[in-house]
Image (cartoon, rainbow over all chains, first blue to last red; front, side, top):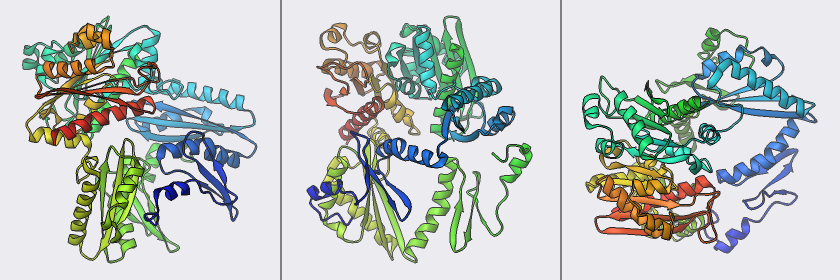
Length: 308
Length: 308
């Protein structure tokens, strides 16, 4: 605030000023920071914008800290993404593994709706460390099975996309309670247009009939949130987008709209493939946005497992 | 990790252990933390899960800090959301306001794609503080105009929803490069089904023709990312969802798909109302996800201004 009086030229100029003896941290093309040692302590000054801070932290601060921490040793860390197991179950699974006794440090990071787990190793030989991480990852995979979203850090939508591309398949999505989140996640992946045909967000019943060709009597009889309707939605979206795969979600995200028979969190997911159409029912808990997130994640995860 | 050997009952039991003399911070229904004074310093211990930490921080830590900081005084803070002005332009606008000399503390928080601004006041009378905040907010509104997203903290999708509800209008959305993000944001608002009819995510040109009735020759002549196509998309989605309002976006989110004439970041937005159809062209910069976010935000903001 003390800068308020200054002309903007001077405020801009100030952005380029650094203390005597400081080292400029220049990522190139983004905001700079600087570091200096003061009274025996290393100080790092980074921009306030999270994205700019992150770049400098990853490229300057973290390497400094690692080198500082491990001395001449090497350090390797791997982050694994898991979905479909509570943190406690995951802890149990980790404890079952004998390999953990060899100085690996395990970190648990709940990252709704996923759980992320970091494996950190130190040693003299980077090659050996990578091999150990591969071995640990494989061992964990044997313990938790499909809950492990691949050996790497790829997102669920990236994994689905890779499988679709590999198998030369395309996908269309019909969303009710997820409201477009599944399409949004799929299209965050560069090149998604190669395998994602498109989707329909049908909030109203009329749109389910007009666009997805869900029979009116089906919705009258079973309701919009039902096995019959979600199956018809999956088949309908598959058909109108001329895609071999159709994924559909219909549920009650809340906070209103629930009933004793179908409380908030009731979600039907349907998957139409060349083999036919299946549907599964779920009961999720949480806020509207959490139920949307869980529904989208569960639908994409079903597709990932189906494509394996 | 030292807990690894313990049976789970004991690990659970440990979660309930607190140091002697500590005060339990119990939000009720969520994870607890505790605080204690040690060697003259207040220490707060909160859960690691961000959502659980936030609850305790907001309900225990922050009030403590505020009381600690202002002594017997009252403190009132308001967060304002702005879109359509750079942080520097915003700073300029803030500096133009004479009212700022009365001991208000202004905080700038870039919150892509918005800028958030906090106004903090201290004084003896809470009522006066609220009135001062109202006056400051109004003054800023006069300075920045429609860039200020309302006087409160409502999100852009909430503001659009309120206007639609108030005017008894419904909306349908056709998304290409935003890939479902606009529908996702609109449906994050409870009760959105009252005014949001639904949407179509048309990634392929065939779907634009089949579902949105965009004439094939239009896309052959002008391309999928063009004024003519996005206008046809807005009119098409308005028609198929029987809605008085149709919003459409077609662009190149990248990283591939650009050309010299239409580089990555080229985005057309179309809005069909009862008065007719309009379209605007934009050139955004950033990553694929940033261009998606900017396109969705700009489309929703156009609708917000249109509905005023």
